[in-house]
Length: 393
Image (cartoon, rainbow, N blue to C red):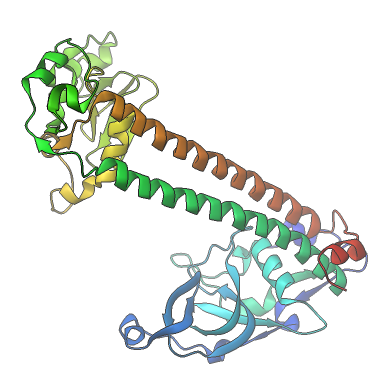
């Protein structure tokens, strides 16, 4: 079976060689170490496997620049990123092939790029666990432009990779900021635990919304049960809403109005989201309809996500939460304006993360488009200009 990219006529000046003819293979030097063995020799050198660095030890086998390609456990489809570059001192187990470009034939950078571009599934054996054995590895057909063009292609794509890395760093920094803010805002040490008060009950039945700690609690924050701050003190269910659809009238489904909390008590245990449209659900999802005079839905969305509800799950064959577990949790009830402000802060952080994620997705599409053009020769590069910009001679 041959891919379309491999049957296409090669551009002028290009050739096609088997990987075994353009790269040295150093698999005979690999040595697997168990987790127990590695624990005894912790150190600074990377211990590498099929998909990257998995540990650090105080010994190394390789010293230099090599391309590592998954032997098993890799994503061998096109753009699968089953190969990665290692530079310096490191150790490799038996789940990654160790390759080094033969000088004058190919560069390590181009070898890395082309292996991550090609669909390698046609060389893989096995159905349950796919494996790229060394015999098939040597047979991989590599389209090869002249060396200067290889370097130019690598220069262009490495610039895109740098942009992707910068975006990813920004995402990670923003996620760390969010994590720190959640710890600070949702575990406020000034929230002093007191019992739910009668004033809250008055508010729940239609009184004035809570406006400040001092007004009602003199600086103390009540910790309440979830039922204390839901409509009518209950979770919504099908008996509380008229459902016109005949199929729903006799079902176990719940109809949840929009902008309320959905909490998974089976399956994706402890996951919380806010539904944007009215929907029905079943016993696997707990719908929580908050009293808007007391509670801000976004605040409790963040609070429950921060709480890590999995730790409260019943331990059995299949771990699960129950409505009773959720009902018996003590949760804080800060003043409504404070809830809203906390939700606004965390929502702003989420919007920034979402924006960066979209930038990353766009850059990944740009990279794939460039790879399709440059690695098939559909578009040729001005080698001299690219290498000059990249600082190469």
